[in-house]
Image (cartoon, rainbow over all chains, first blue to last red; front, side, top):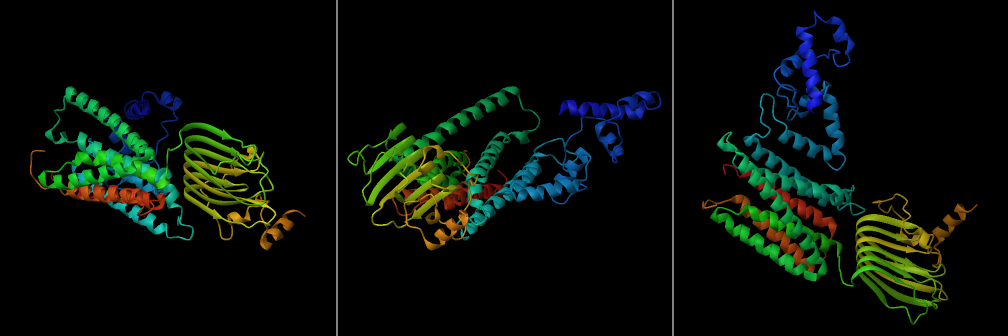
Length: 430
Length: 60
């Protein structure tokens, strides 16, 4: 910002002092000088120091953020206000940005970025907003398609991590501003030791976070959960002895990854790597295939499946599971994908908590594969042609519409057609 | 931390974190099936409650 601020400060000064002496020159580099409507106000503030972003005290609707941005950029604040409101419809981003600006941008007339009195109020407001969003997302999940208006997906991808960052930031801020009240005497040694401590805390947090996820995925979820309960109880007890707020961070760093692993049902049994199976005969076909992390491919094209039902289980913790099925086999699917993507021939969907349960019928003379698949985080792909794998049609996160079921999968050609489906096929091929 | 004052933030945080841990434990012992549709709101509610408590606890 330095380079942007200086020329304006200089040219405005020149405007005032040297206008009479050098009229030609000031016209020469005139682009920056085109006098904006609030020229006087700008000259006033830029004379002593570089122009700074402040929250406006006079031109405000809520916290004066829009007014401050408006006078900083010399634009009508209404544009910023509309912008914040518009961004609110993108998962509440506008609210978070506004609150961040409210907290971090100092009010007009104050050089300090952090107003200690504001901290309590800001935390209260943020806490209330976060709680309100939690309530909204629970209400939203009662909608027709489970997710209401898409909150669930937003949570996983964007708002959840944002809430975490907000909490982490608040804790760090509370920690770093502890000695701010003592006055201006902050010595370099103190700052360095604090920064070193913050880096150490971040490193420890990262280890704790991924360690907890790994332990939970390897089957230690109950132990991790018990530890969280114990830390919670300790924290509650410590409240009567002055408190131990620092315990909040390790507790959440344990609880959240363990929870993600639980919600996605990630199970690392079966090892790590890339496994491909292409059974050549029925004797080679196992009842199920399992992998902890990586890519699991089961290719059934060499098999001559007899008529009737054949169960097959697929179990993958994290990664991509591909099942390649001959064209003349009808597939029923009972699958759970915790987070990611699932495809059954020409039908696909992505998001969180993807459950598919489809049991189309088949002619008695046709073989039917009863696929029971479990993928924690990643993709499940049931295809006829391996070239179709990774073909996305951009419907990530799309929900099924009414009547838009897996049974309608036109690619599931081995199955018996329902009348509505036959009608549609006839219309599709004139 | 030598003071023996009562700290409401720690109490609220301890209770919601213990409740959150209990939720995870119930999933692991198959008493309920934790899903993202209520996992994320639970995370948010926990964090929101802690922030709210610390915002309302001033004077420390």
